[in-house]
Length: 120
Image (tube, rainbow, N blue to C red; front, side):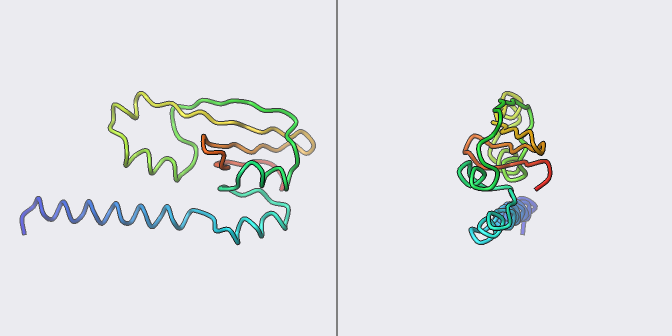
């Protein structure tokens, strides 16, 4: 087999591994339902699910970053974009802020939690 053939097989294996990692990192519907019942927020929840657990936020903030916050989004970005596209891309997030007790939930452009902080 040629070097090019081996490199192609390795590239496909790497992509398959990343896809499996993305699937493993995505919480199941059962995981999210359990978190809601326990009063916890977890990555992958929708805005309506966070409202069920924490109620309405005290304030909303917008955040723009050069790097993706969520691991899933970061892996997809790295695979799907050229270096030039990555250099020109900014990521916008909505941050829900709660003050008593202090906690935050950060949502990606699809309305899914990619980061949460504070007591649960």
